[in-house]
Image (cartoon, rainbow, N blue to C red; front, side):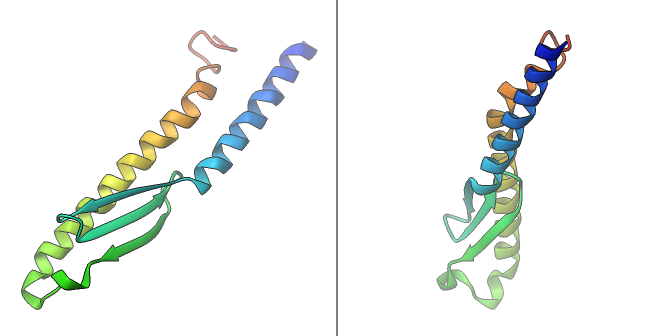
Length: 101
């Protein structure tokens, strides 16, 4: 029983380390031919939105809004993939044939 508790504590420590690393890791997505760039952490916190000022004119507002929306959604997808990549091996030990399976 003590060995199992040690394994659980070890897994919890690994999970906490992976989560901390995800909070620091970033992904970057762009849209509109690079006119809009979004930087997001692995925990899906948007850190930056950069817009190329050369593309902005009053008539381009709809295009700009679409590009921002696309870049944010791509960054979220990349952050989710990063989370799955980093936490997947740790989650594999829980349930489904792992520690509790």
